[in-house]
Image (tube, rainbow, N blue to C red):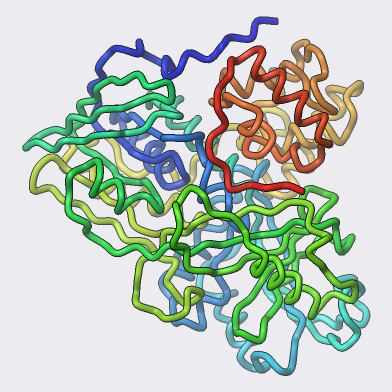
Length: 528
C-alpha cells in the first residue's frame, strides 16, 4: 500500500508558486471553513490558510451541541435563539452521520428558577422556529422516568426538550472538504504572516510550518481567525482594531459514564449558570462548560484545578454518585472569541456574531464572535456581503445542500428522517461488510457517512491500533489533511480517548514513519 509522505503545502500547486484568487480566508475553524465552502460554491476561487490543523483550537473545544441556547432567553437574546433554533434541523439534515437529535433533561431544583419560568422558556423554545424532526418539550416524573435513576432522590420532577449533537471537529473538516471539492485550495499548517492592502487587491505572504513562503494575490480577504482575529489585524494585516473581543475560556471534563440511557442533562447551578452532562463516545460522560476570563496566550488554554473542582461539584449536586477530580479521564479547553458587550458576567456575554465589511480599498471582511450552531448562516451572510464587490456568479445555496458523506441515499434510498436514516445506513453497511466488527462499522459510518462505502471495500491493510487500519490512516492523510497522530486521534476521531498509552504510541510511530516527523499542532487537550 502506498503511503505518501507529506509535502508541506503542495496540495494543489508548487510550494514556490504564487497564487491568484478571489478570496483569501485566514482561519481554518468552523467559520473560516464554512465561509470558504459557501464562496467556492458561488463560483469564486478561494484559498484558506490555517496556521495549525483544521479545528485545532476553539472549533474542536465546544460542548458539541447544535442548540438554540435555552439559557440565552434569560438575557433576551431572542434573535440569536430564533436563528440558532432554525438552523438545528437544517444542519441535522445536511450531515446525519455527524449530527443527530438529542433529548435533554432538566431536573427541577425548587431553589433555582421557578416552574413557571422554565415552562415559559420551553414554550418559547418550542415555538420560536419551525420544527419538523425534533419533538417538543414535556414534563416528566423523575421517580419513574429512566433519567431519574442516576439522580439524587430529591429531584422528582423534570423537563425534557430537544436539541442536537455534533462532532464539531469533523464538521469543520467536512466544510473544508466541500470547499475543496468546489475548487478551493485548503492549506493547513500555513500561517498568513503578512497581508498588504491595495486599492483593488491584497498581497499576502503565507508561511508553512517548515518555513517556506509564497505569495497570494487576492481580490478580498476574510479575517476568520477566531480568538486571533484582532491580533491578526494589528500584527499581520496592518489594520486598526475594529472590535473589542472578550476572550472567555470554556473547559470540559470527561469521566466514565454516569448513566446508561441516551438522554443528556442540563443542570442549573446556584451561580445561575448551567452545565451539561452528555453521553459521550459510548463509554463516557462529558461535563461542561466553564466560563472564565482568559488572559494568557490564546493557543495555550488549559483547564485548571478550580475549573475541574467546579464542574465536579456542580455535577455532584445532582448525581447520586459523586463526581471527583480523580474520575476525570480527559479534559479539554478552548478560548471563545466573544463580542465584548461590557457584561460583567462572562456567561452573559452575547454568543451572537458580527460581520464587518470594509470596501474602502480591496474588500476586508472581519468575522467577530459566533457559535457553532449558526456557522452556516454566518457563512451565508458573509458570502452575501462579498457577492456584490466580487461579482459572484451564483447566490446562496447551502441551506438544502448535503455536507460530504451526508447523502445516504445511494445506500438506503430516499431520505426520511436524519436519525432513522442513519440507523438504516449502519444496518446496510454492516450487511455489506459482515466480517468487520459491528462497533467498527458504526464508528466508520459515524465518521464518514456515505464516503465510507467505497474505501471499506478496499484492502484495509495492517491494524495499527484496535479498529484502526492503514487504509483509514492513508485516507485521513490523502483526503482530510491529517499529518500527525494528534490529528487522527483527537480531531478526525476520538480514538485517543479509547486507547491505552501504547496504542496511542503505535499510531504516533506509524504516522511518523509514513508521513514524516510533522510536529503536532498546539492542542488544548489533555488526558490522564
